[in-house]
Image (cartoon, rainbow, N blue to C red; front, top):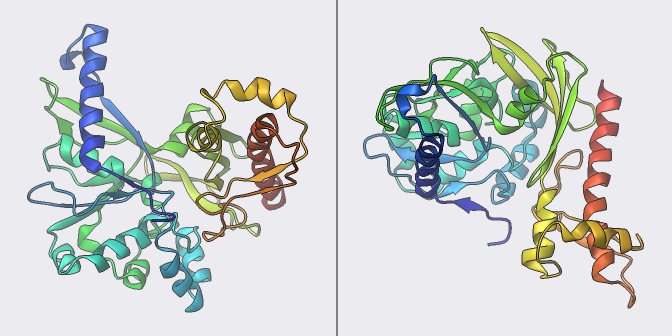
Length: 354
């Protein structure tokens, strides 16, 4: 369906386990040599599973998924947008987990009642993996992932009763929220007990990895999408340019905040040139092609809507300026330029807010 993006949670689990085992084998060590496990993950991607069997209710609904746009429209129409931003730092957009949870509970008869009874659990991918790694002993997440759910009060550092009620999400299905560095449980899966000691959503993990520890420092990382985070210290800055206020990291109970701009399609536009259009065989080809392109066309890669600072889930991709002379080289150049143009949008928004 247009705008729907899903993953198989069991496949994610199996690849994580096999990768860990392969890494141990290639390193020539066993689990007894490990000091701990750290997890970083797609943030808003949503899984609901059965507490007793571990079986997912549905495929994981991915952060890129747009199916909950009507729910977001209804929230805005009801006048909730300002309240949502004040509590969560986010906007009513399908990007975030909360509307995905609501959609899933609406689809399955009796699911909401099972969730309220504690028989169904919600989590982003980190929570799902930890639950399975600990054989169901730990239903936990960290503050960065919690801050992306549309259900978390980023100022009080607790799940928001107001947001749970607004989205009709039973609090009993939510994980315990911990610091990024904490005891998330222990796994015996790899032969010896190994503690899980660190968790952060992928963009916050990149912020830590790029050493953005001081207010005013910013990182921008490029993968499927592009995400720019600006450390604002202990102050949660309310954006006037449609950026997100989010938790950058939480250590020893102290929250550090960030402004974030989210671009949904960055590297994925090159993947589209390869897999969708068949214009290239490998991503590396776009470099030389772009040098030969004339820069006369503009590509808007809104394949799954537009993120910051536009937040239009219904927008779709477009190419402007096509002529009979337009070539694959021109398309490659326009694809790469689209990443730069979108990044510039975020940079200008951050300068205006900070």
